[in-house]
Length: 208
Image 1 (cartoon, rainbow, N blue to C red):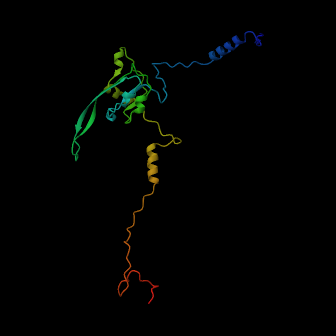
Image 2: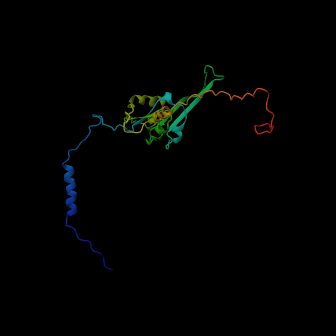
Image 3: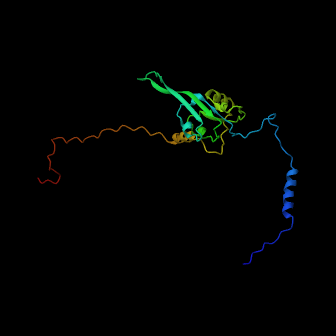
């Protein structure tokens, strides 16, 4: 069998290419951020730490059930709330414990996405390292303190799709109101001719 011979390149061409890359990198000015003396400029959607807005939490347990790392721990109890005018008091869930173990969290953001009442938010803060791994378990009070660092939501993109609420309101406003039904008069029965009622079978073609 004859082996196909490849054309031999110029000797040392690979070395020249490698040195060219090295020289190109050496001529660029290095940009080193002097952290921690200078705070880094983080992207607007940075994932730092998770903040909790306790008053929005309804203890639906969605975040805890959907967490792939099982790092969210929630406890609650029920309380009766008297509603004026109601026949009996209603029950509501009261949050007792909401802990996130950031030593297990992988920052996937599923808990924030599945929360139906906007109780969890991303904060760009990332400087919460601890000397003891046990201190990475943040309780609801600690998570609530991170709400002060949550940035405001970005402005709506005029070229983007409108919100579902805006679309539903516009669709509802576009439907014309149904006109009120006019009252219809009952049908009027024809009055019989004077002189008596005609017997059945009598007609214009009857013989005299």
